[in-house]
Length: 215
Image 1: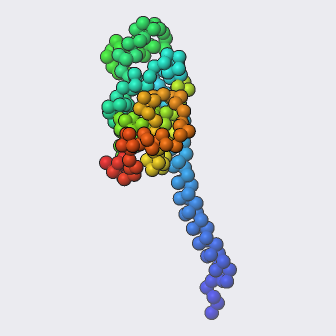
Image 2 (image 1 turned 45 degrees about the vertical axis):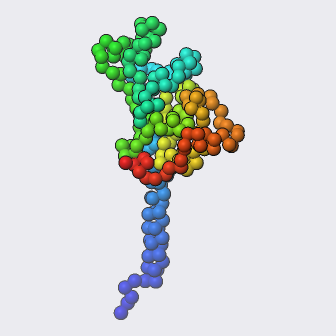
């Protein structure tokens, strides 16, 4: 009786098994890499806003501090967005009839808030508290980048779990005095003992437990 499979079938089977395994591993690796690309993390992705707000002008030219508009960052889990009243506190006298300020004036007259688009949007299963980070000596620029150089704010960091854990495992290089929290031009310290001193002063601990961010 003739053999059902020829000797060549063994080679074909081995080749198919190798290709199948390579395809499975390759697909996993490709997905793993894709999930860390800006297409997924939204890194450097521009968000359309209802008002053309230039942070460079307000921060560098006018010297407005981050906490003037995002005052909740020191006392709340969210940094908050400025209300129309905050905007009109200046713009009822400065460029009150400017074309670009029409959405602000319309919001002020109607009482409806300006529908700002969220730029830094963490998943719903992630808990992040702005106030604890600021109180422990983490500056705004550490997560948001040099906002004073951005005409339109974009997400400058990936904000992935690995990126967050890198800082949580070794927070010392990222610590700064609380007085410099909002200082965009604050230089990274050359003295390695500064981080340790600030960590002791602010009671900074290495926290990497799951429940810290996933509650």
